[in-house]
Length: 260
Image (tube, rainbow, N blue to C red; front, side, top):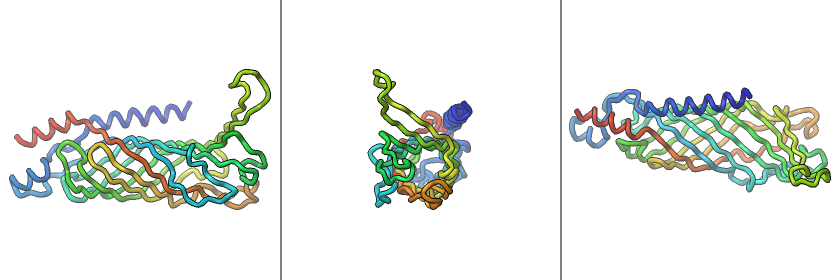
């Protein structure tokens, strides 16, 4: 129940802050300002927009003992981005939000988390709160949105839910659902509670491409798992498509005020 409360709190916070698209409403489109008064950078502003992303993991060579099943692995996230001084060529960006990772494990007898048993399905699931800091290069700043931009930065995330999920078929029951056994293991000891890495994105208006590289290891050593040695890490690369949203009506009102 407490996890549902955290999820709903983050969603409502994201929606609420999205209603204030410009916290300081003193800006004009870049080219118009440059022509009218020669002030290329203008007064400072904070542009706030939301992003919703979905994507997957970039395949790479895995250990045969612990490999990811990429077809069943994916992530989605919702972020709020605070862009400082969007009217300049380079803008600092602070972001925060919520992310869900589902990583399916390829099944074989050597897989150290199966303990000699091949499951019908086995997954690692994570709910995390990422916080990021980046620099955004504004190739062209539109008056009504992010414009054309590229971004490079770093992130830190806290995994407030770590879970190992297993699904097996049984011979009990005639009903389809009764013939399946589901097992959930919360807070497994072999998973890290936090992580960090690098991320970047390039986009235009409502759509952007995001890339994330986790530099921290996902697993930690546990005496009764894999002989006490750290499990082979999954791919650290994630790539996805983001949809950017902002309060267009409010931005239009702010821009009209600046022209007066």
